[in-house]
Length: 229
Ligand code: Z5A
Image 1 (spheres, helix red, strand yellow):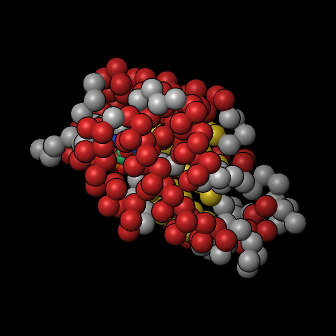
Image 2 (cartoon, protein in one colour):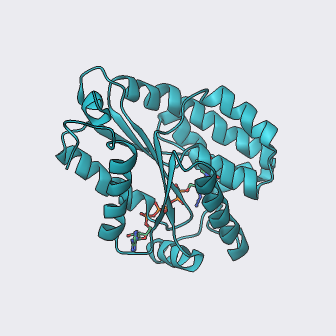
């Protein structure tokens, strides 16, 4: 039986799709559009995010985005993200997947690799150890990496923020955001089976069409029946 058919069968494991990218790349916008399309295809899906997504992890989200974690240093800040992920995976992601529900997650472990690893210089040894504890063998079936020129993303984020204060990461300088973009492009190049890099500078609908193509190619390609149109 093909992939799409098997995920529709009661009791089959749900698919796990993460969305990654820099500031203002459009992750939340695209997750919402994809959730609507999956609902129309009668696939049960939840939308969640990191850091956060569970009551315990949302408390940690508040801490890290306030900048508190930064005061503790890169390794300890990484531990905060790991603690949030541990709770989120155990209480939300794993239960949903095992019930056959698809999980659309706004950021996941690639964010730690990009932000804390590449930009925070946290060592691969520390990152690997935390990953073993928090997610074990769990990895997304598909990771959509939304790629936009840094200026475009920052302008979008600033327009949405209006007069509000930038958070801990939004207030980093332009070099940080350029390095972040490079880090994501590298992650996509290193794991083409799982990751699809999408030019996210087009209109939301045009980007959504590329996201859907990625799903069809990576998740539904082997389906013989019941693949959503
Ligand atoms: N972080 C970390 O360091 N380590 C970790 O392990 C994890 C996270 C998991 C969470 O921030 C921060 O935590 C994050 C990394 C760090 N860094 N920051 N900042 P967050 O959750 O508050 O924010 P975010 O993840 O960066 O997302 P965002 O800034 O909210 O943006 P977005 O979801 O990618 O974009 P959006 O909300 O869909 O769109 C932004 C605006 O652009 C909005 O007004 C849209 O209407 C508009 N938009 C969207 N798409 C388009 C297109 N295609 N054209 C034109 N306009 C568009």
